[in-house]
Image (cartoon, rainbow, N blue to C red; front, side):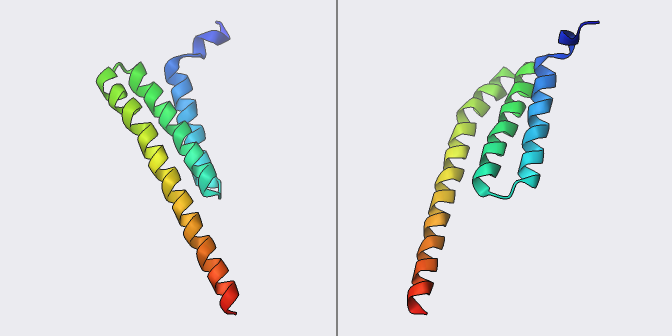
Length: 93
């Protein structure tokens, strides 16, 4: 039995999904969580392709990057608002 027989698209997809899910649960920084979400989405995309749902994979390939960009923009805006509140609070004290 060859070790390369275990390296399939389905197994790699499952590993990516597990790594992404564990990273989302255990990491603290929001940017790290967004990166782990993209890794989880890559694993999900591979699983969808390995099960030959190519129409769903096409939609995922279009919508996943858009959702990550929206999350990143929201994270940037939240950090700007927090920084303004902190600087405003320091000036008033």
